[in-house]
Image (cartoon, rainbow, N blue to C red; front, top):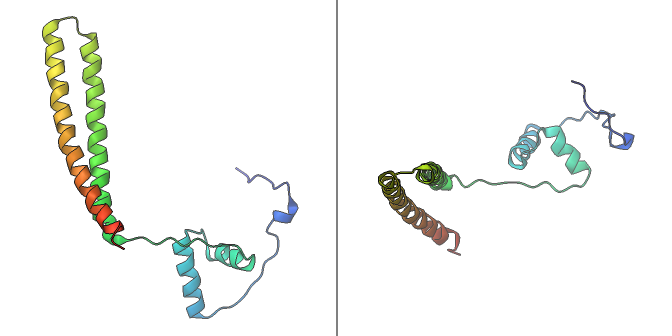
Length: 135
């Protein structure tokens, strides 16, 4: 599949510029590439030459366990929600009063599970807020 042609030929990258830099400078450019999520060192250089802003992103690795726990809680809550929807569908389709009571009790149990997960979620979020609002 070929690439789409640019309408504005002024935007076309048609000239090569070859430069040499020191090892230290190259490492700095590579670091900027990683922190800015740029696709290449050449893209970083183009932004520098064009006087464009380069957004650098920093990641706090101490937050990884907290974020993993939050993602896990989210996944569990989503699964419980799916289960509740399935039981509700069965409840609405049931024509027997005994089946409806059974499905209602199942749904109540699932809501109790959600209560525990939400308590854990609030605990994690409050610890997170303490860390963020320290200073």
